[in-house]
Length: 333
Image (tube, rainbow, N blue to C red; front, side):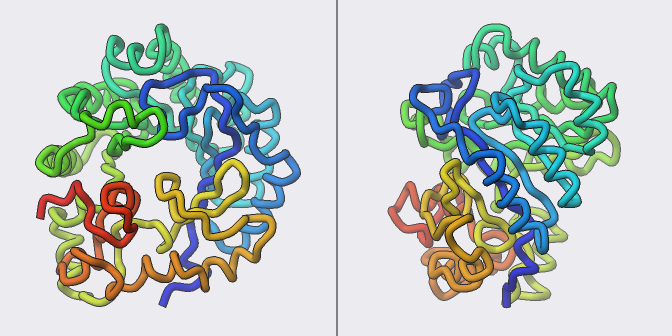
């Protein structure tokens, strides 16, 4: 039985505005007009609402550092929750902000999608070097830094380069995730990875995870658990208990720029409003969130022995089939 104590991770989109206009941005950020997000006092109220139970809050966008009050918000969040993270393209992070980020113990997730030529083609000329400069300065200041990479068929061949770059930069970790044909990404539908490519990526990441030294390597994809021996054993030992996999509605919700609560950023099914509704009531009673926890509601995944540790990506299932309980097109099983 999942309760409020299980809601450990909340992501808050603090703006849709962005200094860049990345080619496959799932939110189409950087265009005009764009929502500036909740006011500072409203974001603080969100923090107040989640701090009794949440462990981690992540600020995302858009680009969080376009907000003039971003350091104030980070400071408030850091005084309220054990862990605060920010996803950023890195370009707007200023040198004078870095000591504060270190003192707040903020975890910085900086987007890097490949080598300089590929990254700049995707995000804009000069953005690769700008991001590297910021990453190096953050690492030197003792800030925990993770590289954040969106993978498609176009940059699948750059995984080894990125793993090596993470090692060279001395970052804490590197996170990979699938590119989704949402927002401006709809123009790149042909680059969405096939199930065979997802499997190949998962197996390569598993190999990288076997190293005991170097950065922590993560594939933010529930399907990888189906080939991780420890997770497979957990599914065998506890076949009816959720012990991993897609976090949407299990240990995580996303707060969109207007305050709407969704299971995840990519699954645009609003279940309520973070300021207008009782968050505990939403978490415990939302039909969408409840269905995500009920094995009997799933289609292809219901009979699968990996359901407790996987359940596939519910957003990809929704966009492929029209049902958030349908099959994940990336599943190779």
